Amino acid sequence: MDKSWMKQSRLSDSYQQGVNLFLDFAFKNGSHERKIVCPCVKCCLISPVTQSIAFDHLICNGFMEGYTKWILHGETSSHAPQNIESTVNITVDTSVSFDANDMDEEA
Image (tube, rainbow, N blue to C red; front, side, top):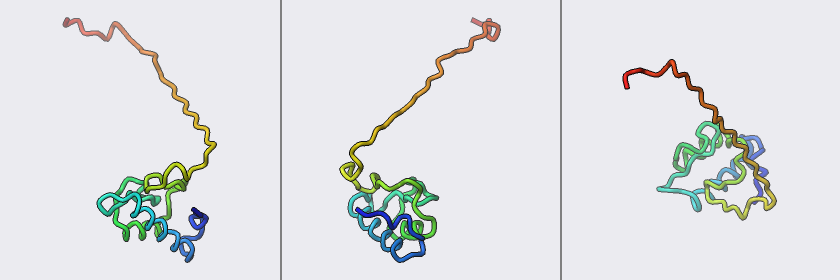
């Protein structure tokens, strides 16, 4: 699916037509109780909204940066690039500080 319209000016016809295509897709494939989580800059996929409100938000605010794989709106992973490497670095601080002078002697 061509998403080049997402980088166009929000005032352009191509952007507005693209928003309508996105909303048609999202409400067909990823809506719940006639609402979707709004991918605009201000809502950041948190607020569930109707189609008309989502349209207004996306025209006024634009899409949040990087939301080009519409996984929360029904786009399957088969649409995603195949050779993606994911690296997760987790650092756990296991040091524990203990001072015996801080203990109560009530025990």
